[in-house]
Length: 232
Image 1 (cartoon, rainbow, N blue to C red):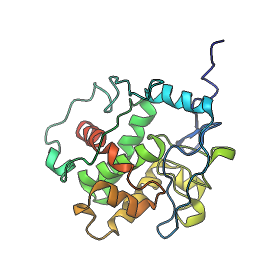
Image 2 (image 1 turned 90 degrees about the vertical axis):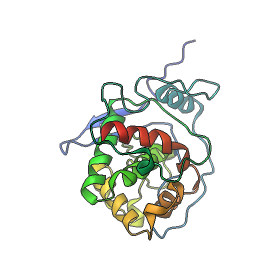
Image 3 (image 1 turned 30 degrees about the vertical axis):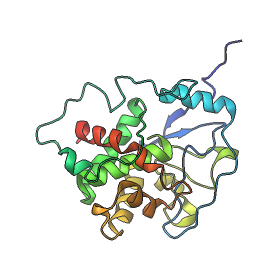
């Protein structure tokens, strides 16, 4: 019998505030989820529902063997050519990548969220390198989807692009599921990390996020740099 993936895939709903929040039924945390800056990370003890795992693989371009299937949207879309004055590779990845790199194809919702993160990086003054850190963090935490509450499978009260928690001081649910707000508070927290510009990406991201999986951010550095190069 053919498995119906559609009931497991993210459902997108737009509210009057023009923010897009994804709710995924049957999905636990997609990554190490963000706690407050001073909170202690709690390990995730249960995995995603089998059907949800298959749906996430389908949605993110991974086949059943776990190998990523490349597409034209992998780095943000082929229709956006790098602009004049684009950031240099040394500015985007000053320390080189750490460990094996992962990639996922991006759909329009993910692209728009990446654009928002980049615009907020400009506004908050963290620049191109900050944008790379922000996008890599969101790729790990939510695959660049603005996630709503996942019901029984939610990790505590984590929501939004960066899986921030209202209970640990990141803001209200409405705020942290607003991509502009969530990006702003992420970057403001990053700016409070001493010498963040000179830290490896995973260290800078982990200092802000206090994740149960601190080394998982590094795998997205190369794709994040490609996205920033195209969309900056």
